[in-house]
Amino acid sequence: MKLIQKLKNYLLPAVEPETSREIDRQSLRNIYYISCAVLITETVAFIVFLITHVRSFDHDALISTICVSYCIILCALACYLSAKIIKRQKLTRKTCLSFKLFFYIAFMVWAIFVDYRHYKHGEQILTFFTANLVMACFMIFKPWLSVLLVGGVHLTFYLSLYFLDGAKNIQNYNFIVLAVASVACHIVGYHHELRVCKKEKKLSETNKLLEEASRRDGLTGLQNRLALEEDARKMDGRPLTAYMIDINYFKEINDQYGHAAGDQMLKEVGGILKDLFPDAHYYRYGGDEFLVLTHKPAENNYGSCTYELREEKYRVTALLSIGNAQGNPATYEELFKLISQADKALYIVKERTHSAEFGGHDRRKRL
Image (cartoon, rainbow, N blue to C red):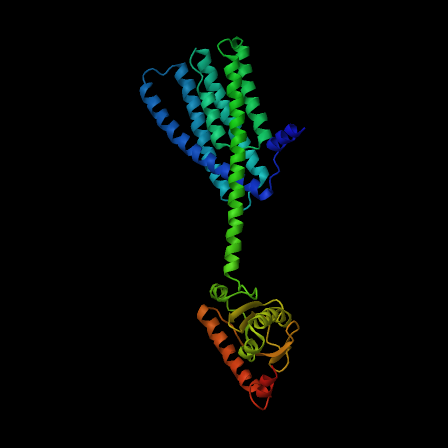
């Protein structure tokens, strides 16, 4: 039962749609390259053939001309269509499968006809097996479909020779071995491509995670200055409000309660900012300073430019000072000019909250 299950999984592998589309896209690329190569080779061979047979153009030469012309037209069509399909943003499974089936069957019909003529004349049949080898290397079908297609093509070719003369010049054992080898090559090729796609997907996901991590502040989880630099280059002139926020007397908090308490308070600020300014972009600007960018107009929903911050674990209470500026930045420079204005507004608030009249010095003693 385990062997049957393994065989079933090998012939009918579970593949995610995204991975399946990437395999299809790679198969189309393969068809494009091999078609271009065969197109060039056959065109050169066709020119040489015409030159050498210009004075003895008989019936066989005419049939050969038709065969080579068919191959050239087929390859040219495959080059054109595969390139056109690859450029599509959304590659549908139906379109890709239809194209691959058409190309495979049309090419095999050509190979069978060419070698059928060779067999009738007592010549070696190489085109059919060469074509199958090329297809096994470059064409990517799901394993179960490969079994049906390749097996069906070999059976068709054998029957055509059998009805001609009983396939008396074919060694059945060798023919079966080549048929099985062709099927095996298709299946192995598919699973190889499947492993490659999975590794590339995993690598892509890892790179995305690393890229995202490089844009995040490790302590607060908010975006960092690198993210701000990148976002600043995407300004589009829409109305924007910049808020600069910092924690009053943060150094004294670290000195009295320790850096663990300070770190915990910085983490708490991230959640508070998301509550105060929903649907915005949040950045740790540096130290205990934070930046919020939002397309919403400024609102005093946090009181008189301050917000009381309570950290329950260490029982620390402090104030956030908040300054803002509004504008329509359309460039990198205009955004940082707006941030500078918000920073100036912040320090006006800090001067007031740190003054003796506001109780700043008394507050410092209570920390």
